[in-house]
Image (cartoon, rainbow, N blue to C red; front, side, top):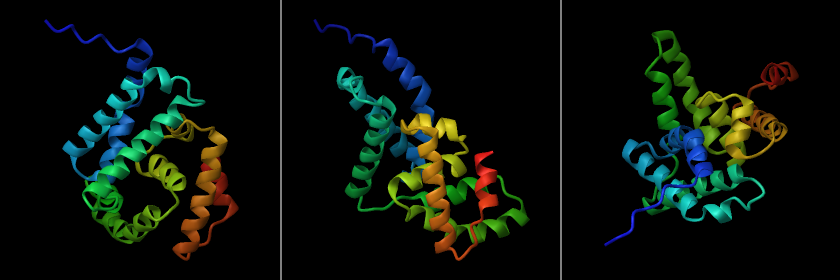
Length: 180
């Protein structure tokens, strides 16, 4: 007779409930397949549950968990010899709710999404979570396990890099609007 699987610890259950949807949305943006995103996200939570006592000893559970998510997605992309599907999935998400005028703007956004995909890992994460997935700075910081100041710093650096790459002017007023 096999013994029943014990319920996950309450703190893990709370962590799962808090971050599952965000992790799933993030995985889908990179993998572009709903089933694969679900399997990948569940795999991340299984890994975390299997090592939960060790995870709790990390300086930041959220930062550690986010790194497991990123590593699992990266491993999946390597196995399928692909790269992030961010350009396609982010554009499609916007197209679903777009008007004709917005579609004209989205056409020019393709270059933006491609530039976002070329950002360093942390800068890309904050831009994706903040502007593509729509999380506020506080939630982005919480998901990534970093301070809001760190998120703002990554946002600033990413926006400057994007502005330079896209040949746009990045002003202090633009930055002040984001902080507000």
